[in-house]
Image (cartoon, rainbow, N blue to C red; front, side, top):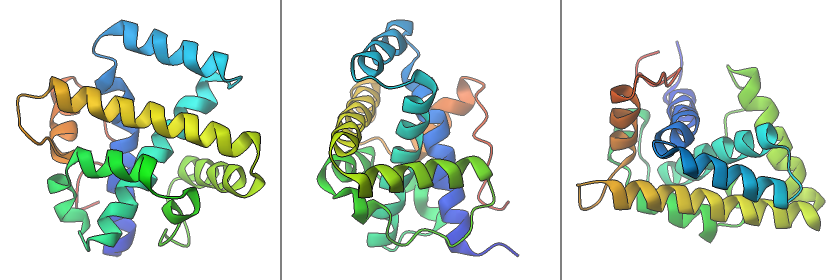
Length: 173
């Protein structure tokens, strides 16, 4: 049986995976993000994967801080995730993660994030740049929403409406 802690990470990881495709409803947004990644000297695939895991880490950190369960992640406001992305220290985002990851991609991405965090220098600058890109993506979704305070659940809804798979998006897997 999967623990709620593991389910919470899976839900946060799912949020990260669908976030950029939902933001990219307007194709120019992806081109702009790719341009930024190139200017920062980052590989596009690596940069986008780090943005995905950054979103998962930020959502997970807020959920853990506020004692939100995997089943309650849908009520977590996007604004709280955006604030955590730029307001928490990188190492704070790593606290409370599962000891093991069911998905090897998550484990690799978290390890790269961990490496960037502890290497410092240009890697810290890259994490800062990625955090601002993530915050911008979350703000775009919040401004696009008709809801006054959109939540993670809204992102999952928009992803489902767009036919995007969230891999571990269900709360019972």
